[in-house]
Structure formats: C-alpha cells, structure tokens
Length: 99
Image (cartoon, rainbow, N blue to C red; front, side, top):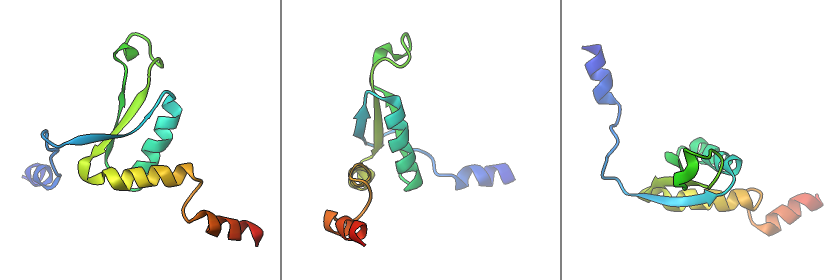
C-alpha cells in the first residue's frame, strides 16, 4: 500500500507535452555544462544527440537540450547570462572590477 501512495505522489510525465530546443552545440562538454546550469535552476531538461550517426560514431555530431515550452524563456535567459559571465548589467560588472 505504501508503494501505491508513493507511485501516485510522483508526477507522471505528459507524453503530449511540447518540448522546445533551447541550446545546441557540437561539443558534448559544453552541452553538459548548460544541462548542469538548467538542472541547478530546477528546470527539467533533456539532453539529446542531434545526429543519427551518434550510435555508430560516438562523439560525432552535436547535442541539443530540450525543455518544456513554459520553461523556455527562463532557460534561454539563464544560458545568455552564463555566456555573459554572470548576472547584472555590464555597468555593474565594471563597477565591481574598479572597486
């Protein structure tokens, strides 16, 4: 009976849920870093190979990250912020470096 309660408490994935691509890279390591960023922000994501040749030639081709449609904007914002070297405007970062 406890197993039934546990099974119903966990949310079940919706197979009809729309997923959108928020990131792609030829470098698996870069994709793993972005996946970790999204994971740490609590955004569910899925890392997939963008190449059908991946099974035959591991490491060849690219990787894509998919998120739920409702998480797309937040995910894209986090990715942009991380590429810019953190949060805050460039003026705020300049002020911090001058101090």
